[in-house]
Image (cartoon, rainbow, N blue to C red; front, side, top):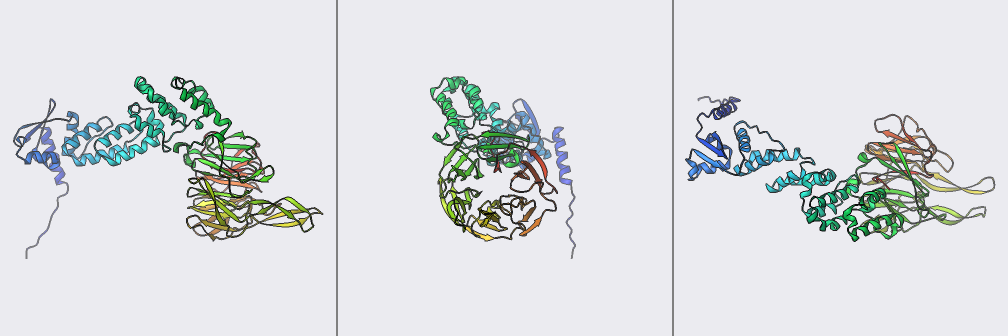
Length: 580
């Protein structure tokens, strides 16, 4: 039996191709010349036919080019032909933003599928605001679906940067209006949208002035600062020449005076960046709001109208807005709910029940408010009657923004809770601690109430509207701070009862269900509030009015800022606002 062995000589094919390319460059053994404009490219029919469906069909048919020595190629530039021939013979092609269009045209005409694939990848990798619209046009012209998708995404996410490019002014009116009306475009400030409109109109003012009002209506003036409206918008000639535009500007001024008269404008996606990018915290209480810029470490304070009291109110952010639920009004609990995007405050549908000191969370696009205290008449065992007595409740309700109404959610798993903390992890709401009972005391002869905190941890599954219990905390806590970071729930400070402050911290491992005490104590004791922003937990101590931060891999709290003018009963939450 004869033996047989297949032997492969690695690199031989590439060596042969290199020699054939050398022959091409030296015009040896070339049997066809490609004429492009006034330039000639000696090549080999066999190599062209093996690389291109276009040439394979040309040389295999009974077309006259099958035997001609010189073949004229139209629709391709000489520089593009040189580049694609280099690729055919060497597998290497040099692409730039300047030549990619003409090379793509050549590859499409010659049906060089490998070059088209390379260009496809190049267009996606080299995509930036300055090339976005040009690359999108190429993608549309040559049916490069993924290029079109990525450029459309870039156009929205980098809208401001794209809008200052010269190609932006070549957009058609219909497409520009579609962009301006979208919540998806990313802008640092709404004034960027106004500037884009004026730039586009002035590029061809004679023919485009008629579109200015149509586009100006999509500028969300409620989100533009009063100074900018006064200094820039109001004085713009295009605005001054249009009575309708002037009316819109006047309405924008009136929004700040009487917001109830106006529909709240939504903040665009770009003005609601992730907390890691924006880094703004909101502290509130009474008639005051304080916003903290983490990167600049600056507090800014505003005084709210007297009818917008936020004492004992709970707040939570959803999308681009913050919801303020319940609190005190004329010394009584209220069911009022205010919504704000940082520019105006506006009442929306009230809760079903008036409550104070409730807990709130946003999950799956809805707002959930848990427990709290209700006003009721109470008679102590001594016979003393307290008309301002607050009873702890065990119910919760849900607000659905699309329906603009509240609905009854049901009852809490472990009974009444107030001043509890809420944390959302993977669309599950953890209701932690809080006061769950009130005991009577007579000291020395005056009756009073003493609230007792608990260690309870209940988990609400929004998708099934069901509750489960989790392992209890190590310490009883109420009016404390809690935040989730890296599958851990951190709990800090608080009260054990109405008089006893807690100075400890602990964290819950979501994956293992175990609670662990910190090896260090909090630098403050008593009531506190906490939230996650970016990659840190921020905690605000009520006693010393200082803001602290904690990384998951750090071993101690870091002082972040000290502010002596924060409002009482303060709570801290991350927000997407840039101004108010």
